[in-house]
Image 1 (spheres, rainbow, N blue to C red):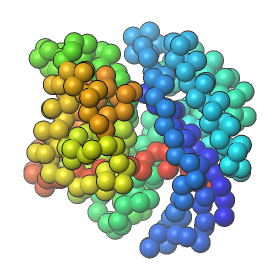
Image 2: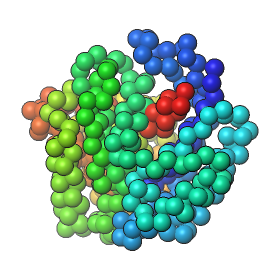
Image 3: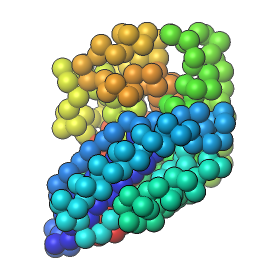
Length: 320
């Protein structure tokens, strides 16, 4: 039995998973060990605040992130995790002052934070999502990790990743770049859609989207959209994980969240306060992705699966 700690620091949130890994406790096909959660936490720190416009991590964003990291360091010590891996993604990749972030995290946690590439992020996302999904053998599964600063498209099967591409569209980036009104105007939505469509086309140059047999969405925007479509009385990972929903119902939920006012979104019982101002953009991105998939697969894709397990699980598995 090995106890590990994984930290995923993205554009919008920083998350911690402390888990036990038993090499003997493998999936039904014997391919991958299972994680047994000890602690799973998420803090919205908005590390990527303003990065798209300034190219730098704002001091107040760094302060919020370091405060959360200090709390995580204490939890890791309390629970005796023997191995720790800290991964940072889109916002940190884009920042000219990322060394300030790296030095601060090293001092707090005693480990070197890894600012990973988009391809590495994609592979970890696929590993995390696929670790808890039923095996589909050789059928290509597309995992879409819709983050704050970037979105990863990863096509893979039981043998691993076939192709992957990370593109710079996410809920925080699109909100800051385009969706500034409350609610956003038609012109703002059109401009954001143009960016997202271009990014999907860029991803399609590397990832054969037309080979997709199943699409799985991960990360906070997708799980929150699913909670909205289900009209949950509160945010429930158990109710959300594994949900397979028709594309029409999913797109309807995306559109509703995009067109709501901030106050209306804040009143939803399953809405995390840190997602209120960016979930509309998350809905816009997810809606455009699903619309493109429906077209390129000639209508074969009629549903989308939501997974609560993602890059965070992939990080933990990578050090087990």
